[in-house]
Length: 147
Image (cartoon, rainbow, N blue to C red):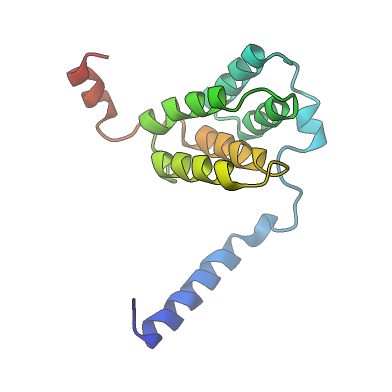
């Protein structure tokens, strides 16, 4: 939707931006084995509580590890989505929480089963990073709706 000059300029800027954030390009993804070893809960309720605590503590690594463990144990994904949705509505962060929630939800639905939990692990990390940055208008909407 642009002329060739702007298209090339946009690609250069995108490459520069991406290269500037490549400091961890070769690192193993979260959660790593040592992170998973720290997750103690095994039941769904305990893991959901641990995930919520990690999010509220802005502990991205722990949120990822507990979410991965939850998926590895075969628990249903819907309670994780419900937990994350609460934060996607109330928090904003720098990554537009509600948009990323929708993206992760859509990708989870279409990703092969062997890889689909990666979407929720990533969502847990983003959710932990955005916690503490309230979405604009959220408090006012709650007050008006009396919730």
